[in-house]
Every structure is written in structure tokens, then in C-alpha cells.
Image (cartoon, rainbow, N blue to C red):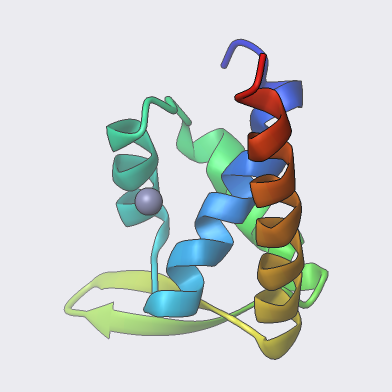
Length: 100
Ligand SMILES: [Zn+2]
């Protein structure tokens, strides 16, 4: 994705936002991000989810429907705290950026 280095933190924030509301899984998140104009491949999103889990922002559990296993993620307390802080920063930044 073009400018992915600039957008990556924003994508993580978007993931946390939804994972704080309900359990998410990879393909759902890819579709949701596509609705907002982000084109992410599974090869980009899945490592991001794994990294966020390693950092303690997300926890996962595996569910099975027949033969297909699906990994569901939700935000941890740490993830929610990070989300709250970054939302403050985004609000602050948006106020500044929209003046120009
Ligand atoms: Zn969204």
C-alpha cells in the first residue's frame, strides 16, 4: 500500500477501535478497512494483528466452524488505554491540521 509507513499507526488505531467494541477477525477487518479506503492484504494485516497481540494490546481465541478455524481478537485493558490516549492525540492533531 502506498504511504503505508505513514498510515500504519492509523490502521492500528482503527483495529483497536473495533476490537474494543466487539471481537474481530482478519478478513472482517480487511473488509472494514477497505470501506475506509485502505487496501490491506492478509500478508500485511495478519502480522500486524500478531504484533499487537505480542505487545499486549489484543488477545485472541480460536473458534471452529466445521473445518475452518477462525482467530477472534479483542482489545485488552492495555489496548483500551492506548486507544484512549491516541484518540486524544488525534483530536488535538485534527484541530490543528484542519486549520490549514
Ligand atoms: Zn471502522
